[in-house]
Image 1 (cartoon, rainbow, N blue to C red):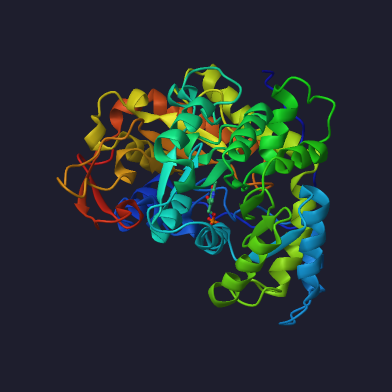
Image 2: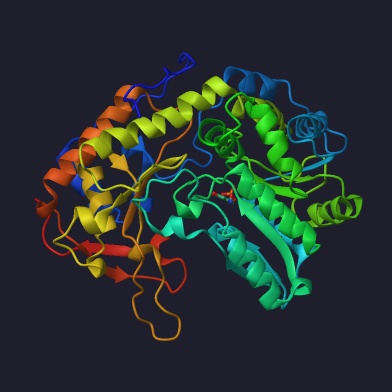
Length: 463
Ligand SMILES: Cc1ncc(COP(=O)(O)O)c(C=O)c1O
């Protein structure tokens, strides 16, 4: 992989100034936040890489569309614009805007499954998994073995293990399996892509057993770019052609538009042709989200969404976008920083158990790295290791994660190349001084999703 990547395919028209803070101030801000990265006030963060969701920069065209949006309750123009975009880009007849990805899950899954049913995916995202459980059904993951080897150089580590999938359907009984889902890219596996061949084979299995095949489409455009650049036979196809082929294998999609569709708030359900399904979707949308023409969004949001669908699949944008994440990955990889490799589509994952060998897993090395990156560079990442796992509900034991990851997501169209280089330099500095950073202990926690609100304390004073 070469160290240079395509330059930013945009120019900056409006800027948001960053507050300059000192190292001493940041140590104090961290203390005030009780060492919880979520609780640091964002005004005191220079480079926020906590998530790529809803944090992208909208374009002048999206802002212009917002100014002329239609705020009517019934028959609002934006709805028809979204519907036309979904028909054009995905080849699906029906679209239902909703306020974000988890709203799409809530509306759609209630149409498809209930108690004792099963849903299978390559890997469910956590809210997706939560919404399946809330219907009374059980989510099962069937990701390929390559996903577990974080240093294995393989092109499509987000794939479904299709042999395992078929065995699971036979074991559980096809009539109990009410949905097969493909998350593209596979967020829970580090944003690793899924190949077209794997989508095709999964679709074949779904059809064979008469099970609906749904795409979790949050990062559909990034996945298409990986297919174009990594899968035999797709180099000469446009992103538009790849997206259409990919969605042609599925029956429906559930989308958080806060990622590849580059809006700050929005989501969408797409249904290829099943009139019964879209009727049910619309019936549930009205009480859960709002009338079908606005689906829990303002007309302004929907107008930005309709434009974002097209901007997200622009090839020069994707080349820069994926290139920027890969560039950060290459800077770190070349410097010997232990990261998941090859890097996925939307961020980098530092293997903090390896980077902080003086800390045991229950001293939360990924929290230690997150805190150190904030102290040294005002950068916010987040712990995706043992701290982000709740205690075992039966034994109350602290659970150990497979990997102590610190995740740094790259927001879309937000960071410049020199900011990316600054991030790399800061990570390398922290790696070089790893032994100086303390581990953490928990002072206060809740039983559910504790990492959002946990209070922590360093095991020794921060120097
Ligand atoms: C793959 C995937 N599905 C669903 C969601 C949920 O979307 P939202 O945050 O818009 O509710 C996310 C969000 O990160 C995601 O990455």
